[in-house]
Image 1 (tube, one colour):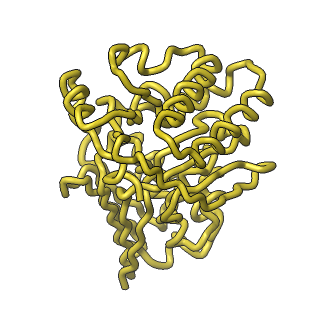
Image 2: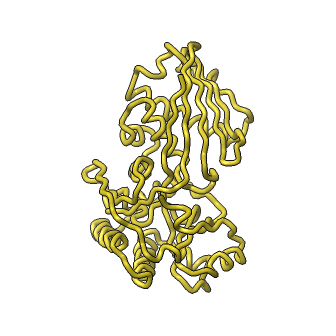
Length: 311
């Protein structure tokens, strides 16, 4: 028997970093995501295959479920690359988390043939890990937030985006996730573009760096939450650009980093906002029909209109 699952990718429009400490954030589920198929077998072995957006197998793995503790004998890789080893280690950590929350799965009484399929490029930062984790949580019937916090860590907004087909307001209230549907569908969305910066940011490393910073957290959380509410209700593109500028200013001060526009695009006429961890993945640019031409002239070829990205 084969079971299939799907999870949405995510974009965090407001609240990056501060969402970890309870700030209200605006998250957008994307039209891109990840599929998971699980076929049950009699042999107590897990065969894993990961397929990228082009249809190529980029990772393969074999796990003897009867010999769970003997890790050295479990991992079968197509290469000895560092990336493959790290992927296997992360996957094993997630599966151990699954088994802890639901001991009836992965108990060695049966096996599984598993395949995953991304509908976006792996370097886009739209949630290859969070979509995988939510799919596995659905399959194993475990709490996806518990699985996240027991394994990879994070705020959980990406887990919320994986399951909701509309923009959401997300916050952590005493470590409990609160999710509220919001009618965010800006009339000026034809002026919004997602531009990839040609590099993937390490979210885990960025979170560690953020956690080590000293700043007035209460004031920052209040300010970002207020900006999030303003983003969610914004009706005019001119106001939206002001909100972007202010949000970048606040986070720039906390991180002690210059905003991406000042570093890479100082001559761009519109507002530009980092999304998620600063320094990589996508940014959001406010512009017009000439916007794609501008960014392509700078060497950035992945430019996705808002309506093509957001559910």
